[in-house]
Length: 328
Image (cartoon, rainbow, N blue to C red):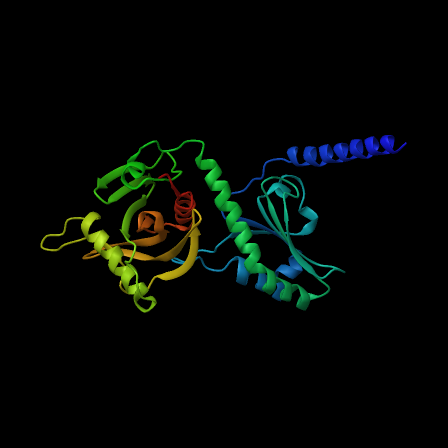
């Protein structure tokens, strides 16, 4: 009798496991442009202080760009029309007055990959409090999903050039539309042509002890970038003047702790310009600790696209840089 019961329990567990697995496998693929967010909230709430609070966090200005662009492009829809294909959107924020008071993130509810942020409360005050407490985590979750999705798409067609591997012993998952345009002893530059300009990736190394004092960290980074620009990234010819890429002197870059390929890193966001010439744009630099080789590995992305929104360009460069792996 015990044997029969054991067999039955095992059989039931297998059936339930298969059902759960099957449910996940049969979820449709998620849809949506990069950095887009569906906000499910009734129209009245969207026009109230609740909607203001959602916009304050989820439509905040992106950092380090040359024009105002929100971190997410938001589409608001009322709950009664949240059905069909729109439920398959990759990033969803569901805000509702309810008998429950909660805020959490769900994964792959209607499609995969997908993140659904759920915020509920008995009244507006509770909903606003939940937005304030949970929004940063939700934003990070949505952003990471977007990075993962972009990196997955890169794999469809990768650049096969070996300059980064040969020079630095590193690998990056770089789309094939990027091409190496310059290789020097301690410098590699890849470029992608876009409609109104270029997207760029550069890589170089610095000695391990390049940054010794926190008090001068920003100045040291600016000095590093400007020296690399002067050596390797010339601007257009101007008679009697030297032109090269530098850190925009009127704006101090923003610096954040980061981790790349399991190594501690510094993330630097700011603006570049061309000395003695009217060109400028955003840059994103990662300075990655590589203790094994007693060096700092520096990977930077920058965009030149005048009078054009650049958020998604810089997002793509970020996603590429975060595929960094050390091969030696």
